[in-house]
Length: 400
Image 1 (cartoon, rainbow, N blue to C red):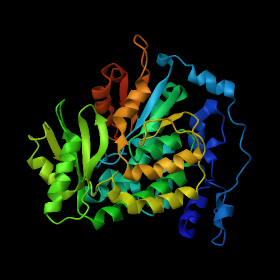
Image 2 (image 1 turned 60 degrees about the vertical axis):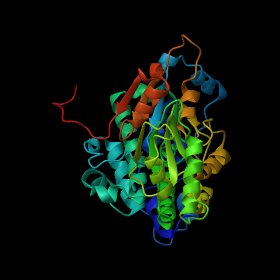
Image 3 (image 1 turned 90 degrees about the vertical axis):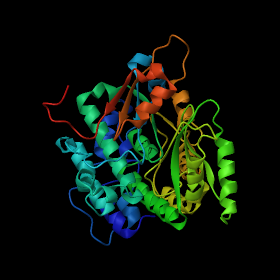
Image 4 (image 1 turned 90 degrees about the horizontal axis):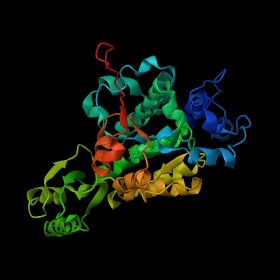
């Protein structure tokens, strides 16, 4: 159940569970546009949350099995895939120029009401220190990524119409699920807010972080983590954490845990055959058991919102497999907090095909091009059909 203040914000914009599903599959874009429609008049302060969030108008019939099979049978060059980035890709200036797209403006306006602060101003003007805080950057990446989808729809509508699947990195999964009609924009954004606050709180309890590592064939990631944990024990740290948190691409990992463990890995990188290491500008050891305290708040909020089966294939970070149903989504979104992101495995699952079969168009929608770089390292042939939809528009004179 939402707090009453948040419920009021949601109701003020006319959001309803399943709101993005009340349109035919043939017009997925309109589903997403409906999420930002305003009611004729806002409800009074005495309105109950259950009344404000449901049930809404009668939904149109779900797409037939025949229609779903038709989409699944599209030839690779007649289809597209979308990739949604995660935390760490944010930068001051993102969102600039997106205001010219009506639905992008509506998304940021809705975000201001749901979050209680001007997200667009924070994205465009900073300060950088505030934007980089977990509590701010996760909602920022979520909203700007979906705003980038609106840009893609207007500039290349076919890319949206022929989309058959998507994946999101960490918090990017929420944007992917909204795009696929599984979650309502407003409810997903509020869930992201709760998630970010819980992860921020968990990270502040123990000095921890994340270390990006580029290795080689002889790199011993698991052994390195074990040695780092043993080192922490000699320092008097009880039950230390040091484990792979992200599988990015072949021999590319992010290791997370106690800061002392990560510093040990950096100091002994040659011993473990690491080529490069870099501490990431994040506040905690995400996707490890140090995030355990964040799981209950996210579980509680996901239990109270409507989630449907995605209308297109969405791949989970936890096991690199497609989501099956709403229960599956709720379980794995919570589990994702304490389990590694299997992005390399997801790329293999999305792009695996017989030799000679073409690859689909791929669009990275959101800040940064890190997912494109990972795709290039996982599958060079698939990357050749990759495009980035930026969240900061260049001046027309700079456009190619």
